[in-house]
Image (cartoon, rainbow, N blue to C red; front, side, top):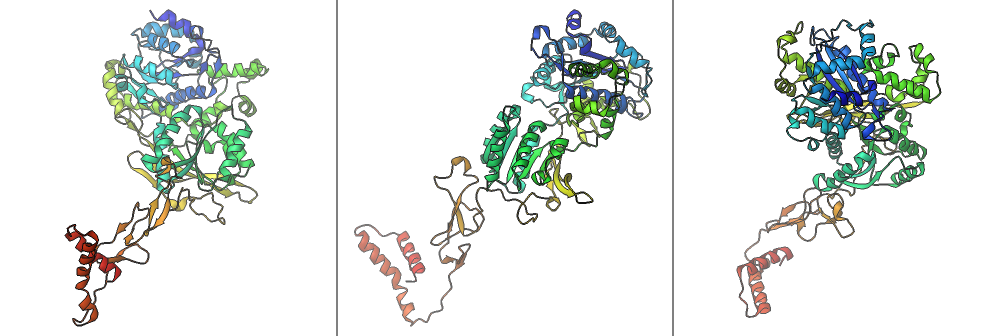
Length: 631
């Protein structure tokens, strides 16, 4: 009963199928409707970076699974890829048709929609096994996707009702997923909270407490700002300023921020978060105004982006980057670069997006597509987002691999063979239990595994951008160098000696000081007056010397402690020293006077207090006063 709606929404460009003995479904927002009309989605605008994510799933199944002799041997994994059109409605209609126990009917309909794709792929010999039978009853082992929060959260609830497992490749907050959906929902990406925790651990490790924040991502800004305001009380880290940068900011706006940063003296460390395109504009202004001597802290790999790397090394050297410790993905980049209009017909969005680009820019599409190959000039001019390095592709690859390794364990496969799938009834609940404990060497992590709540076990490399000269010393460039790592359960490990800092202090490699106030040494105590904001109390103060007979013996002590009886502070007021014991002759004048001192004090107190009783404390105080004044 869903099929007619499915065909209405899922025009041929919205679905692609590769037959196999099992099916893995992928959901990708390859297009969007510029008019945003849910009743009649046009899905006419292509999103190149998401088409690349689609390609990552195809690559993983073709090369890392089906072409791997020890992973699922003699089992061919097929795929069904859905374009969500960046909207929930067509996604759920498509999934309904697939998951509603009408797979035979569904695949027959798909065969009509995708006949050209399937036949061309199966008749073309390009190194991948092309003799796969199209099994209409192929069991579905799970769903990879999606990327958009509004789509993923809703589809997770729907998919879990069929007890199918789903792995998202773009982080989704667990609070957006309702129980019992959580039981079947996983995430191969890393939570922004983990990146944030790693950054805070770095700041704490180097004892910085006066930080500036630059946020170049509007979707992040509100949450990040809330987290920043919690830093003083939770971590004793305060902020000097918070700057948010959006697409509407002009170059002059960015220049104003850069000038303010340049004039700061206390805050030498700047946490900067956001997308590389916005950050590039910001750093171009930093380059223009020679904003040097600052230490940048950031996450992900945007600093290794080609545009960012073109910024003058004096600006970005010393940057500390928290990045996922992905294995090298050069093989995938090589795969991407060799794709053309003849060997990548399966990814229909790739072909259609190129056709749209060609027509939009007045190019002869028939001539371009007839030649099959795609020149580097065309790639750079019209399709650069597809060919740029995209860290999220590693999460798509690992989500796909997680299903393959789980199926390998579920079927009790060994390195040479697997039992026949037809001989084993597929149990979604049992499969999900195995998925929760799967472990393998992934792309985004050398030891990929899920935590008990279905999130990724988090670990990062800590990378430092270091300035180097080329062989002829004609020009300089920056190179990322690993200086440590961070693990969710083990914490932060850094080798300080390997770090190169961006300092202007006589070209020496000194760790920057980024603190609101200097430490109060022993002999002083922390003092705060009304000129210091209460929000900044954990980080900002004045130092005041201990007075009278009091001392402090630790750094940043909140108050001084009075020395006990029969001791006095030393010269620096850092410790109490016992008073020397005097050896007196019984007939000396001092020996004769000392016993009378307390008596004199008592008489004095009696005169002062008149009718009031004289207690023991007064006598003790009198003795203490006598000791201190030498009476």
